[in-house]
Image (tube, one colour):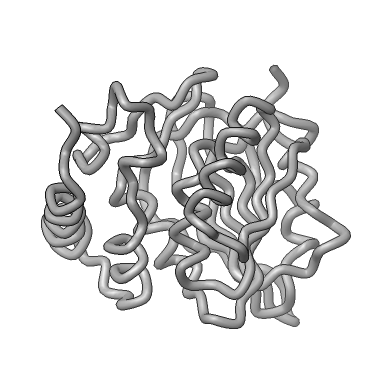
Length: 218
């Protein structure tokens, strides 16, 4: 049975209250964005009734849509403002980009799998996210011609921090990405300053692997 708009709104509010606020996410912009984006539209109908549950879901092509809390945690770690230009590597379902687009001035998102690139582009257009620019390419290369970025988010696990991405951060820019082996990683926050790069460890996580020239090989 198709759930009503009211039901989805209620489930989304419960998701924010019980999964996100309860775990310490306090940024009002992040909480507002998570309340606004219709997560159920970013998954297949077969999984729509689980869209607001506390776990990742498959989106095809051996990829997943991240657990809501992880999306919120990574977004909060970026410390976004309304003037920021953000690069996302790994569009996937498009959900993370949509959350970012609720806060930032413009979101540039790159996806290496054409089926996911095409599907996410269609939902961005359907939901009128006019500040999302998407590209079908190897995300590990970044998007040099649009750099520097105020923030970069990588939504797949990298074997190490790609220097090419650090170089595309503006001074004062923040990057959040999972780094580790192919099964478990640690979430890392990087801030680029005039003096160099500072790293903060945010805790353990598990993502699909980042495939590309500056990531894992296929």
